[in-house]
View 1 (cartoon, each protein chain N blue to C red):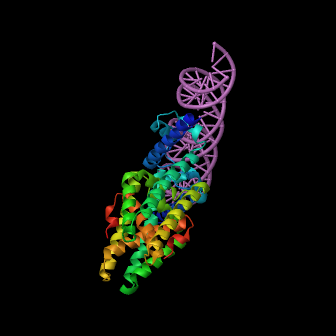
View 2: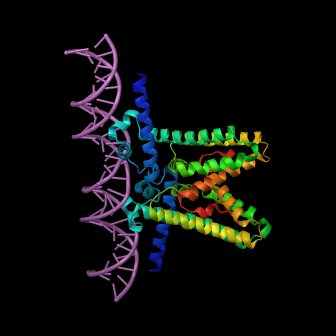
View 3: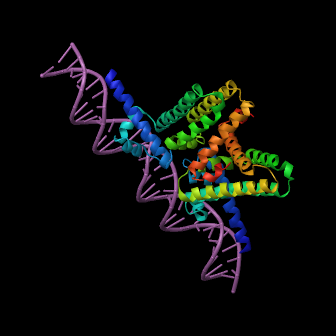
Length: 173
Length: 173
DNA sequence: TGACTTTGTTATTGATCAATCACTATCTTT
DNA sequence: AAAGATAGTGATTGATCAATAACAAAGTCA
């Protein structure tokens, strides 16, 4: 059981990775489960052994992408001095953008998806990130912490758009 | 010709209005041309007499939504005193958000659509808004005008997300 | 070895939808 | 009034795709 479980978890993770790529590249609704399967080197129906609907697959992919951001931020907050905190968080987000920009593209798409489960996942993600950053800023003695948190999130979103549309000039300043 | 032209333009505008609503409500890819037609009180094939593909209809809808923002901003800039400029622009955008939030939801969706024509339309929209706001800030003697423009756009995007996900707390500060 | 479970596939289906075709009806103009 | 243009519809089609069903092979373990 230990072994088969391990394999199964791997498969699931592989499928999620494939899904993130394909969803980001062609868009969730235009992406087919066959494309995801091909990217993961398995047959199309086999995807459904792990995710019983396409939406659950999206949910898994979203969860993975939020975990990346949240875990990264948690580590930065944990071991960065107060003075460097904001700058380091910004740097970390830029790094995620560069290394895993498919995950960010996926989140952007999901911002406008109406299915309740997806909305919930997005709301949780934003809520957790905001609360984490706000608490860290307050802890670090940043003044106007709420405003700084708001601006941090705002710049993050603009950065997303700048990357998605390949318009770096949007970030000038 | 004058009369028939007028009718035709009306129809086109009606279809675009219907499309904005339907696309915003269910998402561009899930929305069907039949739904748009129903909303516009015409038959599904008749849509194609005005827009020969679904993508061209989206393009028309996007153009309309960017025009609204750009025209509104142009008017604010034209007749607002320098000291009130930034605050009035923010207020104007919040007003558009409230009155035409379907158009904003549509723009958000289009931020991640990969079709080249759509990307171009979005790039043009952002470029025009940015240049207009930047020029106005400079004209008004706002200092660090580039940074202020960037933050203006950034807050606008955060506002979009806050509305789309119904998370007003994101804008605190 | 032989029952049972896990891992995986091929083939198929039932819906869905953009887009086309073949019409009809209503103006407009002479 | 009749010819032609304009506005509009019903029926259909050709693709596409998520999801299921039915099956096969490889591993596990008594």
